[in-house]
Length: 179
Ligand SMILES: [Zn+2]
Image (cartoon, rainbow, N blue to C red; front, top):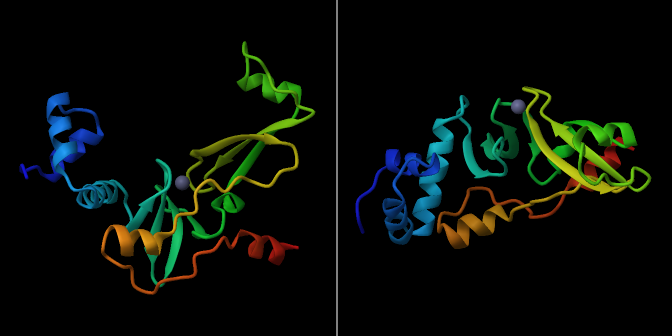
């Protein structure tokens, strides 16, 4: 296997390597190794020390915080248990009338505000826009990605995580507590 190092993968992520070299690396690297190097780079780019288990979006990561696995923003904002939809702890701006939809759909075909709304989710810590979803009115927030972390680490990376947890969507438990 050809040698390559962290700085080379970093340049790969940033799109600064020549294409031929990129192809070599993609072919040579074992997937799990590439995953771990990728996470290592992301870890070096955040200011906190909790271990990143899996990136969710460009701003959000599942991290190990003490005994808990929580969703954390790049800025350090904690969104709680990764099995609960993080959107419950985000700031939400809803575009639900023609005027507000017009601000983002200018010049394009605008959805009917009778039926559709656009929800924008922001981090309460840093104000970054985390997600945008266009959904029928009244539907609950979309839980895009609930990864089976234990299976992923155990079966795929061959590095089981300590303290395996139940793999289940806990979002409704929290909603019930609110009610
Ligand atoms: Zn943030």
